[in-house]
Each structure stands twice: as structure tokens, then as C-alpha cells.
Image 1 (cartoon, rainbow, N blue to C red):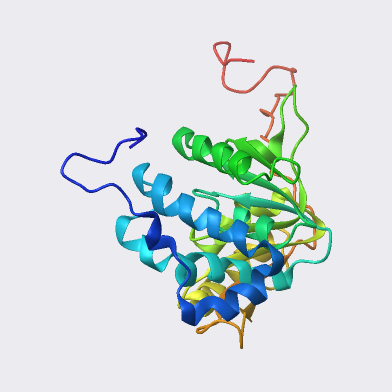
Image 2 (tube, rainbow, N blue to C red; image 1 turned 180 degrees about the vertical axis):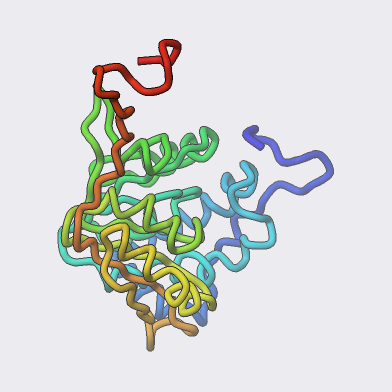
Length: 260
């Protein structure tokens, strides 16, 4: 839904649902510091416009802080000072916008293919005053990595993703966006260890190192966030299309009607 009005028969979203619960206040201050008010403004935006536009489920609004903002913010502990970040499949800005709020030293690019989500992200960046450190790219990860005649390929020190795809597909999309020696940080759930066991060979074939599992935010949030980290160790170019074999006479095999 792209309109500004709530669905017929439903009450308008209540901004109060984005209020920081007292039991999470200490963790929020630890993670956002002086920019806690900015994080609160983003939470309110998610609880209102995010719900109206179908980016956040109505039942998620009261749980924005623990399930979304804090859970994403702890990823910052795996990101070095002054790094560039690309957030793939950013959706409503999770985790990319959260990291940009928590870490003003970062430069963040939000990659998102769907128009209504891109529209929300652009408005959020402007309303939160983050236009100097955050930009929005509309397109798929493959398009961002490939570049075009009018735009250089995108690449960053850190590439993040949250609930986008299984680890093998995620590596195929994200490692080409990662500079050599940079890292993919994937926010995962309870099946993270199983994904690592299943997809490590595929990740390595794509140029990544052995995936590592980290618990981020231990002692700050409970439970800690599960993050899978992959270093881009090698640049693996996509396989080239095979040229048609030529016969001894110099003609392509397959007859005169074969396209050249």
C-alpha cells in the first residue's frame, strides 16, 4: 500500500507505539548515545508511515526497539571506524539506516529494488537529516555491482543484509559489492549455524572465506544478535560464455543457418 491513509476499517497508526520501553532504555543509550533522539524519530517513522505503507506489520510497532532497532544496531561492533557500508535489500532501512544513526562515522548506501520502499527510504533520509552520509540506490544487488554506462559499480568495505536470502544466494549477491578484504555481515536467526554448514563450499567458490558466526551485543541486549561474517578473500569473475567451435574450414559448426 502506497497511500497516506490507513486501510478502511483500521485505526491510524499510533506514534506512541514506538515509545522506548523503560527496560530497554539503558541498551538504547549504550548503542545510540547522543543520537538516541534520532533513533526515536526513526522508530516513530516506522510505526506510522512504515505501517501505513506496508513496510512494517502493525503488530511489529510495539516491538520496534527490541526486534528491529537494537537488534540491528549491535552489528556496528563488527564495523571498523570510518567504513563504507552497502545495505542490500534495505526494505524500511534495516539495518542500514539504523547503522547510519548509531554510527555517524559511516557512509551508507541503501540498495532496494522496490519503488515504494525506495520512496520511503528517500523520505526517511531527508526527514532524519542524514543526506550527507546516506544515499539510496534503486535496483538489485547485481545491478549495483555491475554499474552502467552512466554509473560506476558500487563497492564498500562492509556489505550488510538482514533476512534477505539463504547464505549461498546472499554471498552471490553481496560479495561482488564487497571490496577485496572487506566483509559481508548477514543478520541471521536460529538456523545460522546450519546455513554455514550447508553453504560454506558455495561461499568459498564465490571468493569468500569460511563463514564465521558471531553473537553481537552480548551483555547489552538479550538475546544477542546472530551475525554471519564472510571476508571476501578472492575476486571471482563470472564465467564467460563459450564461443562456438569452428570447423577446420573456418566455419562455425552447426550449418549455414547458425547465427554468428
